[in-house]
Length: 484
Image (tube, rainbow, N blue to C red; front, side, top):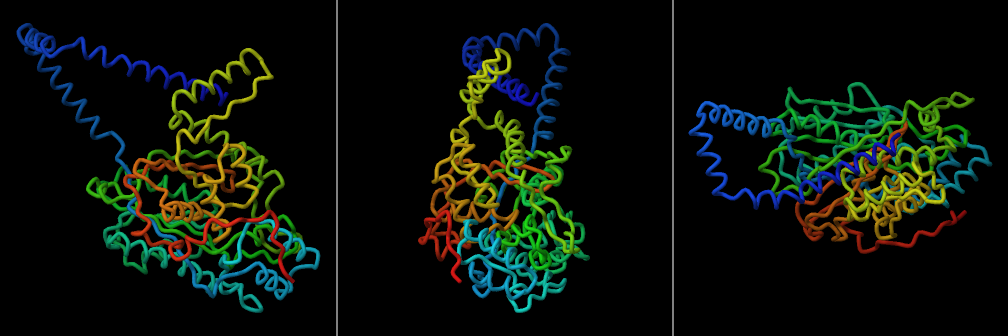
């Protein structure tokens, strides 16, 4: 059914294009003199009718301008770069795991094997509480990590934009696994003395795709709150969520998740368009939680020994692929050129109507719709699968792979490290379109489409890549041996 929905959208878009192609011919036939005669004739025949038509025209025009969606601009964003003391090379990670005393020899070897194939480099960051011997995870240390990430990113963002904290009318914070009381959003309100009538939201338990959910929520709020600024903070917290048991499906998360976070400032103020970086064009959210397999493929629970962890199912990649297909079924008609939509629909008809099984399903070429791709750096397997399925080149995948290598899986904030990489490489030109794709527990696949409003000058930018961008890209071997 979903394929036929996409086909229907393709046909509808094609009809719209055909209609638009007739408009020049129609306008040429309705010359200025003809329109003047029609106007004069209406006035002489029925002045009341003309007055009614004029009133309706004025009303409909006013309603159009009142009801049309307000544009949402991304003024700027900032990604935190922790202190060098928090860097955790692969060898250091293994050493800390051995010293913790929680893991069997077999599972220490398993974690080492995961690390060697993870695509993570030697400079990713771990929280201070887990780099001590023995580790000391506690709520106080988790708050310390959260404050370092959130406040570091916000301070940088406010310095970049010059926006005052009291001008912020909307606040959205997402962090899946650490939800203290008072909330993380309350911590931000208290630190920056945000105003009392701020629309504040704290999203938890929504996985690595929660960052785009936050963007979508902020977008919806900006449709009803005039001349507002929305601050979005995307992060994850590791201190209290390092798994200390021996269930292998839960140990994978230990090996790939690292410290990171981002702060994004959105606005609907039209006066800010001239200095904004991007305009938000589309957000598309797909939720597969009604399916039992999808719902359970990323699941927080206790293991046999009572240790809490997040279990990753072996079906994760298959579930992610199905969620992606459902998401692009909705996104495709919004962004793809008509030629790609018609080819897709033709292949669909041949396969579904004429039962020609030899005709392979046609995957539209999204490179014709986007110049840049920011794919959640969830792990090497995720990036390899999407590179193959979407037919992307190493150049398109470079921001995602280098983010995974340099910062690890920073959950919902990884998309912003990737966009920062593209900016610092001087790739972002005015008019360029960027597709952000994220996956998360539940299971969800979410997309956001941005259009660059100006060319980004790397020399004028300051982000986590600034001091080391010339070192990238680097070659990432399939296996990097962890030295004893």
